[in-house]
Figure 1 (cartoon, rainbow, N blue to C red):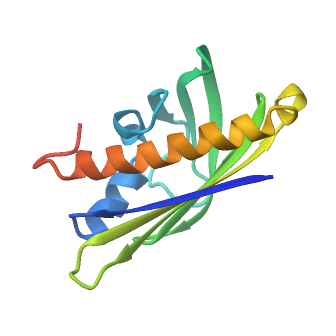
Figure 2 (cartoon, one colour):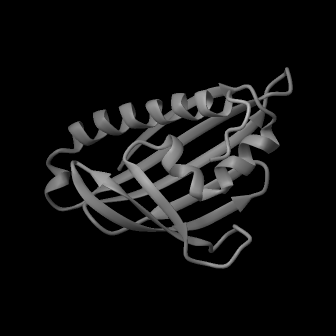
Length: 149
């Protein structure tokens, strides 16, 4: 199992940041390789919600079913995606800094399958780079006046 963590300060309130993260249609705006994310279960988002995330992995088009397996409003979302070459669990936690603004911590756990097991070191390195980049894009996007796309 590979685990990568990254965190970043965001100049928005924790509630604003959590609401943005809980709207999975925003994923394409800040997550590398994601082109679209569509909910496949009825609103509101919560534990058991499902969606399809579309994008590119290693240059190949990918559609991945994702399920919300833990949902604590205004604080934590945990999802899992299985299928393909790597099973992934993502945890996003939003906390309040002393100045009232948000801190986002992302934890990604990956379990390479098949021939990706041989490339675990490269997967870890690539995943670390992607998670850090996603955090930076999230902070930049939310620094804008109207980040909802």
